[in-house]
Length: 175
Image (cartoon, rainbow, N blue to C red; front, side):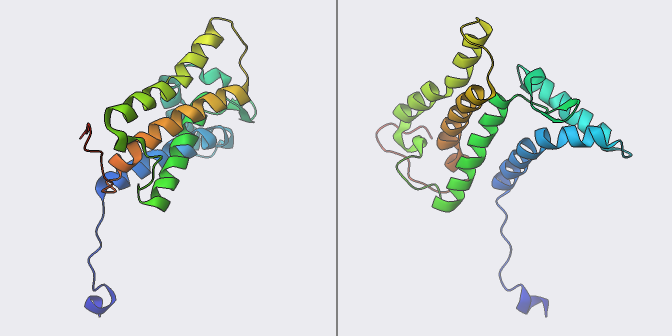
C-alpha cells in the first residue's frame, strides 16, 4: 500500500527549506513578539523576549518599531521590516517564475552585483540621513527604503539560494 501511495520519493531541497524557514521567522517573529509578550501565558513572554533579543541585535533602531500591543513594540523598526518584506516578495516571485526573468540580477554577473550593491545602499543612506538630522524618522519613508534594499538583495540572491538552475551570464560569471 505504501509503495502505491508514495511511488515517488520526496525530494527536499534543504537549502531552500532552510532559507524559507529563516524567512518565515523573520516575517512572523517581529509581528508576533508584542502579542506574545502581552499574553502572559506560560512560556509565551519568554519566546517574545528571545525575539526581542534578536531584534535588538539586528535592527539599529528597534525602539522605533510600531506599537502593535501597547506598550509592546514590534521587535524591529519598519526599515528592517521593509527589508524583510522585500525578501519575502522576491521569494514569492522566485517561486512563481522559477528564477527565470530579466529582473533576476545575478544573471548579469559583476554588473548585476554592482547594481545590487547600489540599490542595497538605500537602507544605510536613509539611516545616515536620519541620524545626521537631514529628516525625521517616518515609518512610511523608512519602510520604502528598506523595501528597496530587500528587493535588491532578493533579486540578486533568491535564485542562487534556492538553486533554481537559472542561467548565469557567460560574460562575467559570479559562480
